[in-house]
Amino acid sequence: MIKIEHLRKEYENATPLKDVSVEINDGDVISIIGPSGTGKSTLMRCINRLDTPTSGKIWVNGVDVTDPATDLSIVRRKMGMVFQAFNLFEHLTVIENIMFAPVELLGKSKQEAADRAMELLEMVGLADKYFNYPDELSGGQKQRIAIARTLAMDPDIILFDEPTSALDPTMVGEVQSVIRDLSQTGKTLIIVTHEMNFARAICNRVFYMDEGGIYEDGTPEQIFDYPQKENTRRFIKKLKILEIDINTPDYNAIEVFEKLDDYCNKNNVIPATGKKMRLVFEETVGLIMKDAYDIPDSVDVKSHIEYSAASDSVTMTFDYAGPERNVLEDGDEISLNIIRSKVTEMSYEKTDDKDFSNRLVLTIKE
Ligand SMILES: Nc1ncnc2c1ncn2[C@@H]1O[C@H](COP(=O)(O)OP(=O)(O)O)[C@@H](O)[C@H]1O
Ligand SMILES: [Mg+2]
Image (cartoon, rainbow, N blue to C red; front, side):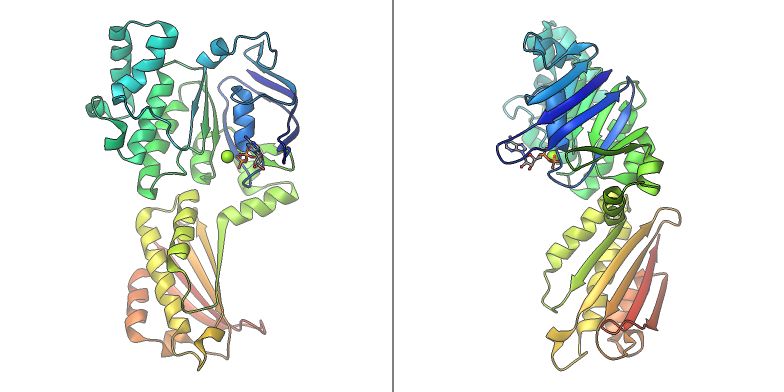
């Protein structure tokens, strides 16, 4: 069990943790979410004492890790951490990476460590990579090796700090699936992740961090579907709904695509649908912007994108300025054909909004 009482962490220019008290039970699988800079990483680093709390107490399995007399190396053996940036030893092979700590810290024989390493490689689906170097692996493979390396110490508690956020979207699933398997083993897992469907599938608790601490603590259903407090509500809404405003035909498409990819990741939208979203977004904005006015710069588009897990579909709403104009009727035929081939429904309506009186609603369904 991890017990935290009145934990405070001050840095010179920030106090991310003001007064945190919480108990984490053995076997809890917890997702930590919250805006950037709210102390998620700081909390993890205080728990495994990579960082020193300013005040407060933390007990890990009954041992006070904030007591200067405590031998931290013993506590850390039972607590692993997996970072966003993998942190593998680049000059060691995969198997040497996994054997290193058990041999150096636990005094295991090389044979014993190698046997266990092979078992773990099997478990993360990379048994054939044992002799490769990290730079010969993809990001997803590196992260699976980093997890195997952590498991080699047989920890009771594993802390994951955004384990999939540095990965290409196509590789997120393979890492999530390894963590999913781990969540069945009774270990205590604490995972900073904004991937809601993943968190829903494996976590029994979600911590929303804000305003210097754990602002709301509940089950995934409570936090994701029925958040009680204002900041949580606002944050969850932003996770579920993506809003992109475009006010020039020369908008930065790369940046928009990154936002779309990020959104798809967090909401577990499958890559094929993500691809369609990109194409539909680009063509639709083109359609609205093109030939609309003498001064194209004056056209504003507000888009609103929402994925529904229940119907496995994405609704893309485009509100645009200017006089009444149904681009589905007078838009460029080539663009329209591309859009038609990707969407299952599309409709136009005139709205009462005095600035954005045109609304286009497109639905993509797998
Ligand atoms: N080592 C550090 N030195 C100074 N300030 C830090 C340090 N680590 C984090 N901070 C500050 O503490 C706040 C919380 O950071 P962090 O825990 O990384 O947030 P999160 O992981 O939620 O994005 C931020 O304002 C950050 O700038
Ligand atoms: Mg962080």
